[in-house]
Length: 435
Image (cartoon, rainbow, N blue to C red; front, side, top):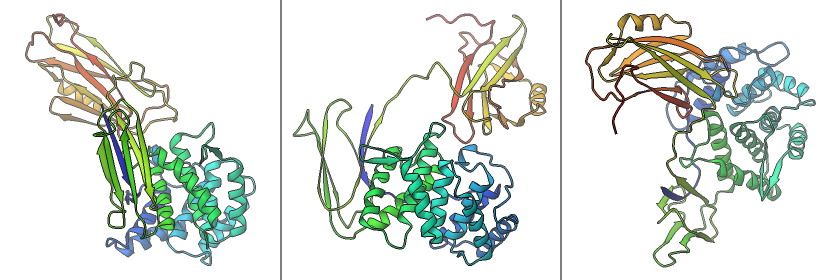
């Protein structure tokens, strides 16, 4: 078991993605526009993408959806035309397309027509950010007031969530509110006080590596935290963070210094032990972010709540062909998964039957089949919720192996490998292992 404590300032990571739909096109153009200050990006590509986005605008000023997100975790809260239009409009405004441009002016008009009857927290937060960027202080104030009435304010921390919101979506909603509060001609002391409460909650949701639960909420949260860091940044001041192990007050102390020369550097130290009581004391005038991370190993959970895999085996003892009936199932919150991988490890002494692999490639829903040493990988396009899908695979025994150990079959989400399940199988004719 390991415990690390780190003191750092937030840094912004630029994430560049392929263009596969309207929303991702807006996302990438948005990232490219920001990245141009640091790396060369062909301006023609940005212009062509922006022109294509504008061509998708409808007569009412909103935008028509186009394309499909292969990774549904990157969808965030974008699930309807109005929310999609707000997202694209935010991208245009961040690219310095002013509201005098006819496309932006028409999209703002469309969004304003829908701003009165908003129930969706995500859409409300996103539109508050849009009208903050556009300089429409009246609409911005109305939306922020509505959001304030639905905020969760506990222990000096503020965030937004609902019974239907995932924790990832709560991060994204809260980040858009933070961006809205800080995107104003002038940010007062009251605004900064309110923003600091949101920042306290957001930094508490960060994982030990600086990100959040998904690509989408990480990008928006880092943008919001970076803006907050820029607003409150001061080149002066320093602070010292002293961490004491109360069980070992002499040798169990760690000291961190944050000063102008290292303000943007990440500092990390392991604590002496996992068990015990620790105190944290901060002196000075610099603003710091302190995080304590606990790492430990846990057994594989016996109950699989999202992805599941089962294997049944058939073999005539004395024969050489082992039949595998593989069943994959999804039971999570989404209607369907992203692409999933079914990873079948070969039993020792067995190889896949070539004709059987060909049959798998032609199965409905299978994108492709690969061999990787003694593993067979099935790329399944998606699994619908609560709809089991079965596949057959034949293995041929080339070498008889004594004391045959079980092999593992693993299923996992291509874009989120931590969503996984596994099981074991062996030959029904194998002699039981002696211990």
